[in-house]
Image (cartoon, rainbow, N blue to C red; front, side, top):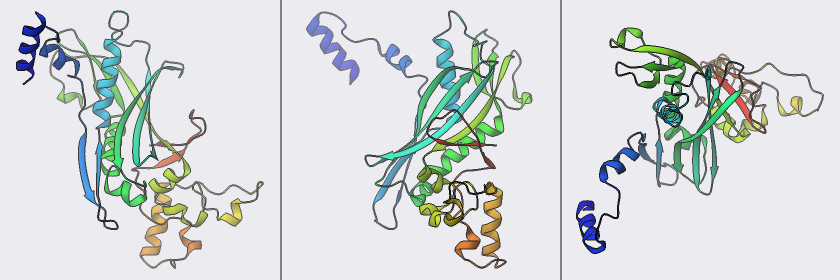
Length: 285
């Protein structure tokens, strides 16, 4: 169809008016396609549509594209020493959007540059716990797990002399001719507002006002000069839910301390004072 239209246009205007298809194809060769999905909301009966992108692949492609733009001066990105990946999400205008901020750092920890990419989307009126759990939470968790398990993004010179970027893996899988120029350690964080954190930590609807970060009740944390409570970990919250499920503790608000449902984020998380002004940020270990 495009070829036919191009011929008609060339005949009308006396020459080519569009770029060759090979150039159009090359423009999108590094595109990371979304993985789409849907499910039926058991409450409303409506079909909820969503999509996600594999974060590890997106990181490889994004940094490679960034390097290509600097091919004349620094194709191997020698000034970079580490990478932070910050995952966040928010709802607005009938849609939930999840994005990552890729922070490229030098040997002093200073940010050299940042890249922002959208990695998830849900068409929904509210980003409730059940909506997140039934749509993007699973795929995004798998993507986060891949980043954490890899631990680093490798800068490699292949057998043709080109510089490529890929997630670290078992060296036994490497074909001959590859030279690892550097390995950029990756830290993964998740950030968002309090409602988002309550959902991903399984504290549905803020679970009666119990503190998101520790086990203090509203009465205990309300005074400005209150004593700090013990910070939650995913393991600690799991122990509370298991004790109630097994009948070791009675199912009361005082015993649950806000731990209502299973968290939507993988692995152990600890609060971290991170450079995300106005936000609450956890590092995922």
